[in-house]
Length: 443
Figure 1 (tube, one colour):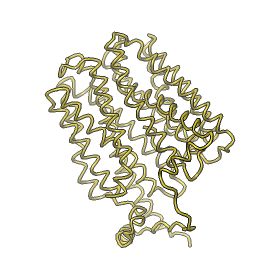
Figure 2 (figure 1 turned 60 degrees about the horizontal axis):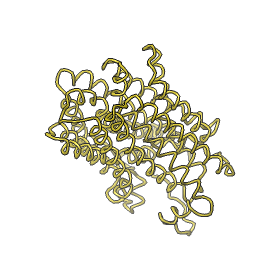
Figure 3 (figure 1 turned 135 degrees about the vertical axis):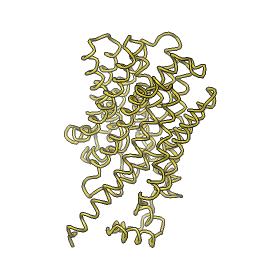
Figure 4 (figure 1 turned 45 degrees about the vertical axis):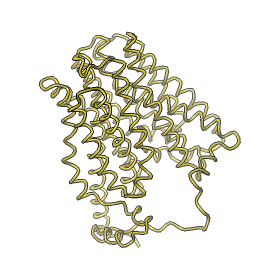
């Protein structure tokens, strides 16, 4: 029986509520993630906490290491306590951790704050993606997730303005105090965000699910048919990725993801500092952060459509090649307007190139191991996210900051080669699954 207009309107309002709350949470996630890179030029100029370039790289890696822990444990924790509680806890954690950074009296305490913030950041994004997927209108899942991902880059844009408007008159600590403000959002999230109906049903909490459905006047998700076949275990699904010659393709995906996230987080952390090293004023360097993230928003909105038409593997390889060209060009002194254009286009390609790796893995993997394949590809890539900020710091410490863009460009070229090889080996499987559905968090 088709839904009535009033029922459809209620479902739409509920989806809008969930997406809006998750979008704001991910906005704060992006602000907290990018704020360190935005204020880093100030911290280095002032020798805040006695920080040196190599230590700055280490501190940047602490947050990404925390994100690795958060991302790998989010699913297990959410299965135990629920997605809503985990989201609320993650927002509270990275907000309080920013307060620890603001009052830090040494590098050790500051590093602890960034690590704890990273755990919250890493746990929030996949949980928010799962939440909006549950409540997305039918046939609009990819669009909804793509919209959610724009919040992360909007947070990056906001971080540049916080650094520009707050740090100059009040100092770098004020920027981290701004990142404590999302604590005010925690009660709102706790009160108005509904728990996932799918989670409640999966945990056998049917009475709560029915009560929630009655409250919002929506239908419960249909029960999945049980064909009697046991679901493969996590380790069985992982073993499937290494059977026969599959291990070669699996490793190629992992290496490509490593290079992609090295590039994403290396550039995100060091872009303002490297641009200042190229002779640009601080205001221009922070404008680059804004343009880079604007490009990320545009890229997220067009990547899935391009991949649906031309194939995710092809788009991923081309996007990484264009990213490498753009990143390398940033090491060349150009007219300011041209540099702005290059930064914007680099943001378009860089941020969605990694997403297309996940799309490729999703399309080329067998159904019974698809979730495991994407999860482990993302997890292995997180090691690149840890390595990228560290690498930038080591180059600056060795007075080779001008090599930073070259090193990141080489990472983009390597990902282009490895995702191309992996896709070529997996070409025997038809790519008809639709890349848009794999827009599940390039970060």
